[in-house]
Structure formats: structure tokens, C-alpha cells
Length: 281
Image (cartoon, rainbow, N blue to C red):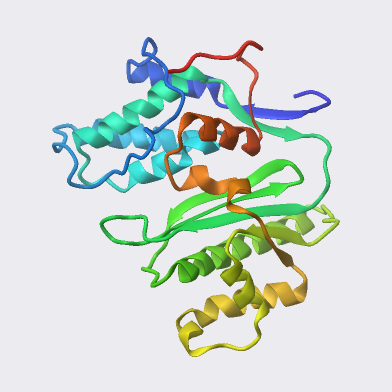
């Protein structure tokens, strides 16, 4: 911590995980998940010792408190706790190899910045090949500091990409409302209403349309929640191009260039990495 801000990292905890898993001497990689990889229950052979997998995933879940970039793959691995396979363990081991490349990486909170919530959200429609459920993803910044993020499978199947998008938006708006009330309790005055950036014009159109259509009745409750918060001035919906999204890393495995860009936008920082860079594949 200095005048510029506060850096939170779990370097010792990360090194303890590597030591316990005997990965201190492994070859590091640049991404926590191979590009394009999709995990399924039927992949590989069932592990004889499921306890080691469950313990490793549990420790990685705790690490996501300061390592947001591994949230997606850890969320994926958490779905196979009941019957993990060799392929799932291999994916977990890749996370360890990624952690080895920068064990001291953490999240940076600058000391100065504007007091406005900036929200980026998205959904990955029917991304689960087994259940066809969509994934909600969002990240919320207070100024330039990341204060909340999520990568979670939706509870029900969405019949269209717009429905999946609107369910994700409703979950995001609820999080924004909770953060707003929490900041008020801490006597933090927000200078502007929360700016919610969306790359789906249909979701914005539904939020601004005060007439419910027949095809919207199954998501009417989500429409009501969002429209109410827009009317109250809690949020403002803004369109952003897909190329400017920050949330891609929360729903899919990215190639190295896009993954590095994703990390840079999250405000991650590694105080233990030399200026000339780290090591990766």
C-alpha cells in the first residue's frame, strides 16, 4: 500500500497450493484454460481419489477473491465435484501452471478516481452443452477499481439470446442496487447513476419500452425490475460494441492476446514481476 493505492494479493497462499500439489517446479503457461476447451461430465475416466480434486477446487475458489481471471474455469470445474474425471483434473492442473507464471498477481485499488459505478455485463446463450443453460457474467467498477464480478450458470434454460441477456441484466441490476445501498451506508456519495454497458440492443429496447408484448410475458418480472431501476435513476443503460466488452474472460477460454487484454482491463497488478515481464508458453 502506498499513496497510489492498495494492492491485494494472495502470493503465499498461491505458493502453498503449488507446493501442496507438487507444482512448484512445473512449466508455466500464459492462460488458465486452453483456448476453445469445453468440459463435459463424460470426458476422461473417473478419478479413484476424488478428495484431492475437491480439495484443490476448494482452494482455487478461495483464490478467486483476488484472481478474477480464473473465475470462469474454476466455476466450470466446480460443476464436476460429484464425479470428477482425469480430464477435469488435467484442467485444474493447468490452472496451477498458470498460477506458477505469476503467483503474486492481485487486484489493485487506486486511491483516486471518480465515484461512479461502471458496469459491464453479458450472457453466453445456451453455452452448457449438457443442460443448455446460459451463463451470466458481469464486472462492476467503482471508478477504475473492480469491486464485484460474477460468472454463474443461470437457473433456467432461456429460449432466446435476448431472454438470456435480460436475465443476466436483471441479476446485474440487483447487484448494482445492493452495492449502491452498501456504499450509502459507508457514507460514500456516488456522483452519478450507475452506467450499465450492454452490447445487445434488444435488451436496451425492452427496458425502454413501456408496453409488454405477448412474447415477453415469460420474462415480465425481469423487465419490471430493470425498468423500475431505470425509472428511479439508479442505472443508465448504454450500448457498447462487442469488441469493447470486458466480460468475455468470464464465460469462455480466450487466446493469449485477448486474455492479456482481459487482465489489463480488470486492473490486475503483480508487484513481484520484474519490469521486463514474466514467463509463459
